Length: 73
Image (cartoon, helix red, strand yellow):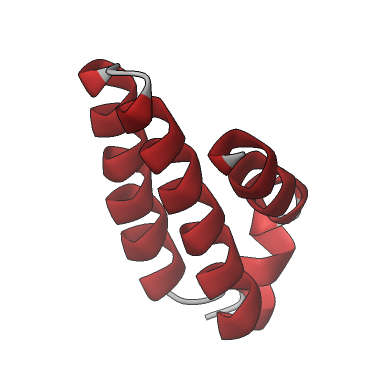
């Protein structure tokens, strides 16, 4: 259930991440972060600590990348 919701939310947004970053669309960014977190919860429920760590690391990296501003800056 967490995989379906998480990846269903995170992947479509992640595919357009460059344009989301360029327009600084915060709602889309929050949606992506929530989706990745839900996927991490799904991996945690299965006991895969490595996959949880990878997803949590991506949350941090994506947030830093988004925070760097648009490409036109």
